[in-house]
Image (cartoon, rainbow, N blue to C red):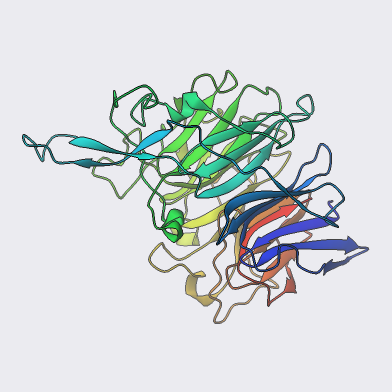
Length: 394
């Protein structure tokens, strides 16, 4: 089991250290600055934090001495000419029944560095960063420089290559409410899942577009949304427009992928070629944001259910965690150690993590809970932290 837990919070980075059976927080780092994601690179131990600085904009910060000191890293930047379609404007012969009018373009700028992923052991400098407005950046020098993955940015589902001219296809990527804080409504990449068997295979998830996969290291991308549903569109089974809240995989059985979606919980045992909806509303398992998967058993996963998008709080005022051990055919709910009265916690998409038999989650009301028995019982690590955006074991 890991001996540190990293929290990205609204007012800085909190690191918990484990000594024997006790977890204690250090003084907060990046004090006063929103940190939307914090994680440890398992290859070299470098700690990373994605800062949403209100004045200077999004930046990355890293620590090579376990969090004792931090240094800012060159911020990600879209190359000149990077554009995307923000909406369609009526034309003189506009047909309201037609799929689109005249596209309106916008120059791309980084609003948020939403998450980070670390390359294989044989790629010592490789890092990935998912951003709002929907760009995937890659670094091969440990974060000192970054390059936009253009095949994904130029994907036909976004309008084609807008570096070279006008759109050649319709933009099918919608926005995410997570971008509203920046005064925009743009898509965002929040999940990056690397196949531990093959460094060229990567799955990403986009709000709101869906899941995409590359099998050639990012040269080409294909949609992987078969079996997913979106109840908010006229065609719930359309190829694009899905809103996965978080997607993750089983390291020991990489073909097993899970997602907590806006429209339910989905599971795949064939590397996202097909998805199956495994929600169980009668058991309270349907809407939510985070999901965690056992590192060895791809049939076992955990969620922290929420009431609904319109009521983002614990169901019935009681906080609980649900677990399946059979690929979503059945779910168990665990409440021991969690508040059951007047609980208004919501756990965001990066707010739950697992390491061995240990799980931890943090909520937007500043509560942090830990389980050391696979989610069956819980202990509180603290109640007065800033709103928690991410939880990751180190």
